[in-house]
Length: 148
Image 1: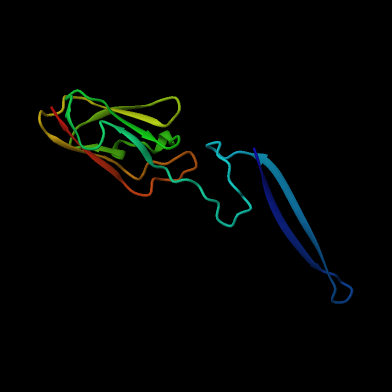
Image 2: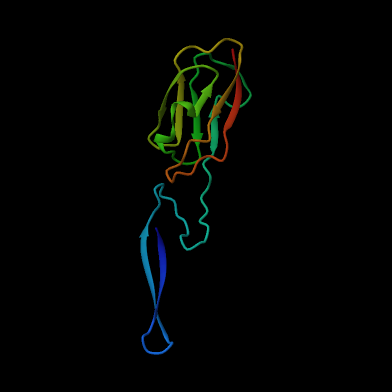
């Protein structure tokens, strides 16, 4: 748990003379951001970890991958499911179905038909995918693998 602090200064010119009266109002609250991650709201630039991909299956450069493989992508933190649009993943011209696990970090893409034999594929995850705070990946992510 962390505290959020907000300060507001109100200035009022008194009717008598040139003296000023001011009030400093500080409000505090406790809570978490949407992803449950702590941050320092008093900082002039709160720092969030960028969403990134930490693992893929098949791995980059893999060979002899089954033509019926499922492509699994693990993110560094939960993703906003609504940001996972049909154009967020590309594997050649293949159509696919996808699912997101309960943690929101693991996405499984299943091509609707078998992949071609002995073919080099480039899988691309678009930077439009966002975490629960609306922060997108800094750039597209791609990797390659070859089927059996």
